[in-house]
Image (cartoon, rainbow, N blue to C red):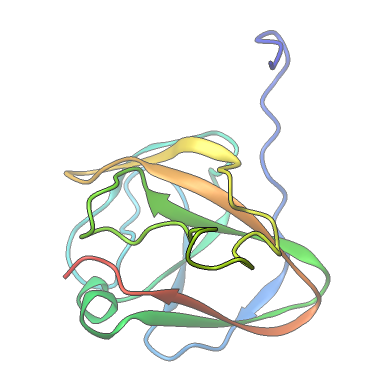
Length: 146
């Protein structure tokens, strides 16, 4: 348990290059839009996340055909991925160990930060940290809500 008297340490940003067409970077902070389409914005942001660079993409496209994010890391890093805090099938779920025995190979199965983001009219977001080596990676996130 964290001592409430200690200051909250923000997560440190790892340098990366975004290669995905149709995706863009943004500053994670209150008021920022999380998708390239629509007006779903951050209404609450954990101090640990504030100021980091996020990646946004089309919500409609993610729901229709899924989304993969192509990034290049300059050094071994933890990549933060947010999953909506809801078990309803309309929301993208954390990979299941029952369905994918390799789901925790890169860590991240358990949230690093519960309810790290609150979005307008959407469930809160749990943040998971997955370990990746330096180099180019394709993160296949699957399909989300339509």
